[in-house]
Picture 1 (cartoon, rainbow, N blue to C red):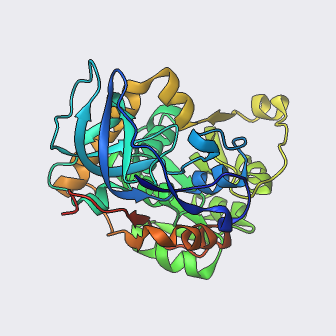
Picture 2 (cartoon, rainbow, N blue to C red):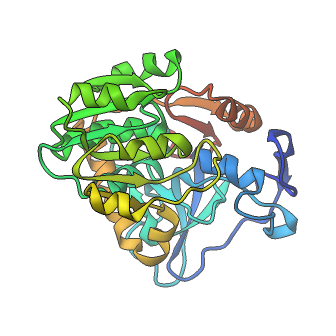
Length: 332
């Protein structure tokens, strides 16, 4: 089969078309003929070497955390999807930039009436958005949410999911005027420049602060988020887009000011609570297909342009969700 992978870490130029054996589904797995593959920032990190050196078949690693396509084979004991069914799948071990991919059945769900191009952008982003809001964030009815990277993949999903989960006020920060223009269409109650956002948030909330902050940025943004919290507010950390050095929170500051910090990592959830990913994926696909959650069509790019998409991600030039068109059936 054809795939796009890399045999050494580096810039986008290390991605190249390769020939690789078509994988066979193991016990509890399904084989998917891939129609589309979603692109996520974690795949940029994978390529750069932040998750280690390539160790895949033939010395190549194949990126890709989420795909849509058609089930073509089942491994022993695989339950749920049927051969011939259109599905979306989360791939915690990567492998989506390929004509075929294997996925654990726990992470595969039928897409129903949702177009496959739309579905390819769901399996990583939407379970993460549900997870940071409901699982790690413990969002309750009427609470106020602040979403950093408000126009990003998870941020865009979280803005709409937060409403569906009962948030009373949904605020966001963006890093550029272009991102603000994109976020304006997502229904935020207010948007702020990321630089110096704390004072603006306190002003909008009458000095109280917010109940929940979603932070994939890190660095000074993470530290400043603590100062924007209401009593018993929580900051949920789920990424480090700025590649900042780690920092240590002052436990006395958390204690004395009734603040909390939580973490969310979808890979760890997939290892230790796989059913949680499947539940969130089912919920998202159903809500998107029914129209309960609005969804903007993704930008569809030929998969030969994967390196250019990665380059745009690193430059902060992407808008909304981008998926690679791989081919195969199930492209409705």
